[in-house]
Image (cartoon, rainbow, N blue to C red):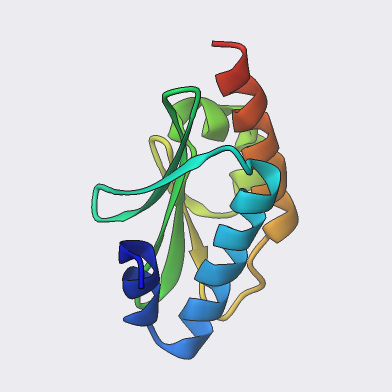
Amino acid sequence: MSEIDQYIAKFPEEVQEHLLKIRSLIKKLAPEALEVMAYGMPGYKTNGNPLVYFAGYKNHIGFYATPSGHAEFQKELSNYKQGKGSVQFPLGQPIPYDLIQKIVEFRVKENKSK
């Protein structure tokens, strides 16, 4: 069991399902990405640069796409609690997987251009 598998396994089933779906989505959109544990959470790198990170919490899923990823989707993310380069998707509400997909696609393109 990888370190990321162990990380995900420690959460309640509902949270695990969201984390696994986000992980699967990232792997599908960035199959060349290096999967790592960083800052205590699953993270991905492409072209030697951070791509995105995600984390589970008691009441939300944290998603971290660097400040540029969040700035690009500022309008779409405006309904969620945010920090610089981070957003919280509350549990008990639908997780916006389509938006996560758009952000990951943007970050993949951005990292390729570096």
